[in-house]
Amino acid sequence: MLLAIPDVLTADQVLRARQIFNEAEWVDGRVTAGHQSGRVKENAQLAEGSAAALELGAMIVSALEQNGMFISAALPFRVFPPLFNRYQGGQQFGTHVDNAIRQVTGTPHRIRTDLSATLFFTGADEYDGGELVVEDTYGTHQVKLPAGHMILYPSTSLHHVRPVTRGARIASFFWIQSMIRDDGERTLLFDLDIAIQRLTAERSDHPTAVQLTGVYHNLLRRWADI
Image 1 (spheres, rainbow, N blue to C red):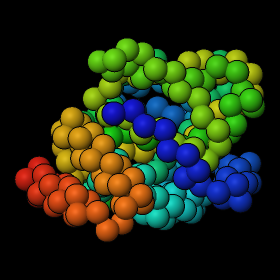
Image 2: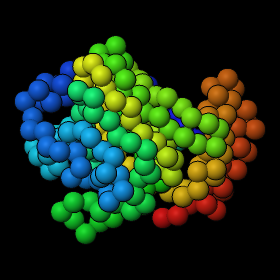
Image 3: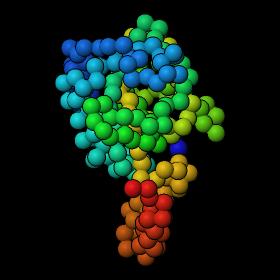
Image 4: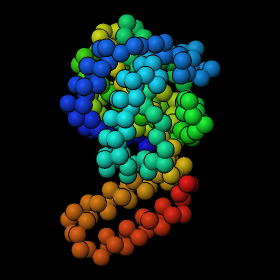
């Protein structure tokens, strides 16, 4: 499932983040790349563990905890502390697949990367190029979203970022370990949850809503990996 989630951050939060980016220390983005992806990665990142990265990461995680669409789609078990990158001057990230397991720096904790997320901080009109291109069984998808919006997609997908030829593309990227490992099962639960919400909004007392909610939770109970 490839899902755009609008307005994860407010305009004020995006503005605060951009002020921090202007004053922050940026380092070579290959510091977080694996062996294969490190050969095709050209960008800069906020220093991991820096005060700027920690403040902005906490802001994002807090926003995600309050975002119903994200919770419904991802069914998150663990969220990797958000990282931040910047592409400019022709920088790009060639085709790669994300590492299956990520170690949380400075801790003994690891997460399985079921879902990948990119949250945009610069508007699509502020830079040329820089599209996130995701390949899945339905073809190739180009993603370039407004500031504050986020794209969520399976970490198993091949993907790349096209060269940024004007301006700068700044985004956060991170991974989610879902309670539901399988993308197909997770998509079915998301579709069912959305249908229940729509039915409840139209007829809050409809007995079918109760029945479908029972089906949802029984499938979640059957498939959950926690």
